[in-house]
Image 1: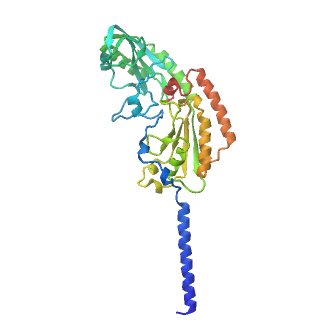
Image 2: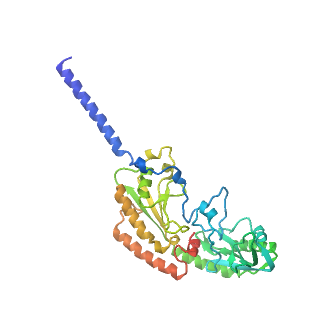
Length: 357
């Protein structure tokens, strides 16, 4: 082999090696950022209970929403909680008193309960006046009650109570009263339906759900990298794959913020090989206590994630969100909080969470 052939062969080998090296470098550069092994969140953590107000509890069978459940508690907390649950309130409920001739046992009241605790799309509830405590409570075995009241919620995010739903409420309440030998007294339907419309109009005009989108600037992220970065800011795994939440400072309250990304990516056989380019931070304003300063914490979390993950905060049109815009939104929210407080439907309160659910 001549010197020229040897030189060409060496040169060709160097070029091939360069191409291979460049391809390897490009592949590594474009690979999604991955969590460090020692801090990567475990798979079991993804099943942690999420203290989120909008979730439906599942204890192996469907449970109908009712007034004796706090929607901010997850399934495990709901089974173990002994806290007093929120009751009927004339501010957002139609209430029909039920007079009984003699004391009724808790067992008899429970046996008379309807199979579902809804009238159409509105929660339906029953309370008894305890002989022992003199307080209204959800009927319980071993207790005795001298009176009852049935109620249905006037409005929620599905809309206002309508005449069909009111009629269903009357049927359920009458059936319960008949079973315990009681006599119900129902408010005028047209008056209550009109009250429901007014409440629904107020709620519709003061229902704020905010979100920020965080987009990767250069390198995409793996689900584990997102979870690891968010965990450093206090987020914990939610009830479904691809969701994390920032828990409230007090147990039982709704989560302050939600963080979500592609569910399919989170459920992939090898999530660390999937690439995410966007995630969403969300705030359900009426569900979170004002004292938690949720919007300020939302802005802080968004900016921290953008800085740590090489991302940019954008709006629905893909434009970067500036600090000045955040300040304007914050000022508007303060006015919203004041308005809700004035109607005794404060954000994060029991009534506020029920109305905006």
